[in-house]
Length: 180
Image 1: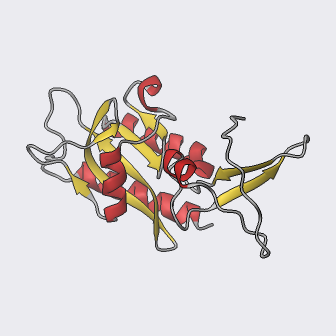
Image 2 (image 1 turned 45 degrees about the horizontal axis):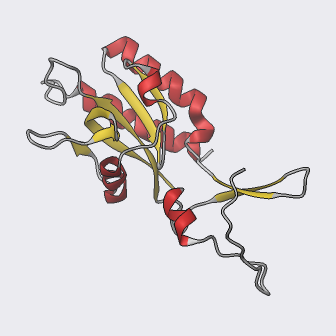
């Protein structure tokens, strides 16, 4: 555990304020769920809760199934990190923080289709999003399923729309799984 040097008191209602600096660095936003753990040495740990992260195995299997059957590279993220990928090097994406641009797209709550001149990367180090569908649970965006641009191919422009349908189906499926 990393010491911050910040001390806060618990108020008469049992509340404690998490400093703005820590919330910013950890991407903790108003309304975000936190899990609370106790440690054997008496410590209390607050950890961001990710409903999509709870479905990491299902996410990995879905991404793998889509990639193997269609050849489309797939990534699935929660509001903070990439939690599943297939068709791209796992080391470059898995468990990496999502880019600010991708975070902004999630905040908009809308699907995203890459257009000429617009680039949204999965992480700050790369991986261009071709099409994205948000995962919505209980009215909140909790993550996204996205297809990634393939080098040398024009993604998102398939004549039959199968890429978008597969990604939309994945987002819907993940949202139903998170509500169980």
